[in-house]
Image 1 (tube, rainbow, N blue to C red):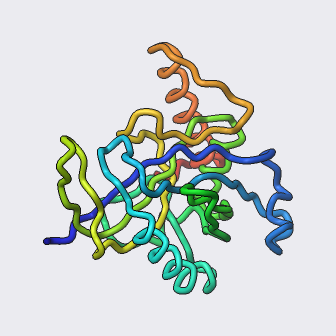
Image 2 (cartoon, helix red, strand yellow; image 1 turned 60 degrees about the vertical axis):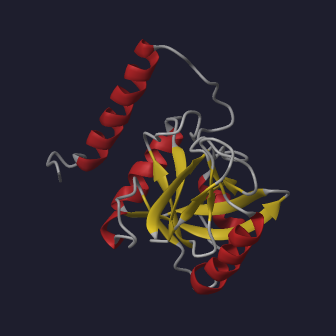
Length: 209
């Protein structure tokens, strides 16, 4: 089977308050850290895809050894169709991952980079965000219609934050916010996103786009 880029969206609701001191527990004084579910094993997701627990566990061990332990578990703000993390667009670093049943949870440090500052501003404004894993591998179609299973050649690349996930319900939002429905509300949210990004990029009167 040929390897392909496999992109996965998951709900990722921050646990606790969104405070600048959240990184103290991880030896990062003043760091901005969020925690939540990164991925789920063994169950069919919105894309009709199943990640076997043993494959995801194997990749988490490798990711821990090769990336988290070396303090380079980086991700981007909105991911490209690429198997390489672009340092120009890095926004966060995964500090820790752990299992809670079939849920893979993680602690994520938001970095003081241009993309990280945008991400932090969006969090503080209560904007709905998504979390998305990126990996390389092949899938096998199962007997159940519309269901595929990720195969042994799967290789996890990173987790990215995204603004417009293709999977329904795969968003990240502060825990004190509530779901809203309606075209006008959605439009207002995206207008707010654009306003925040513009203010960050043009904070000195000169837009850097």
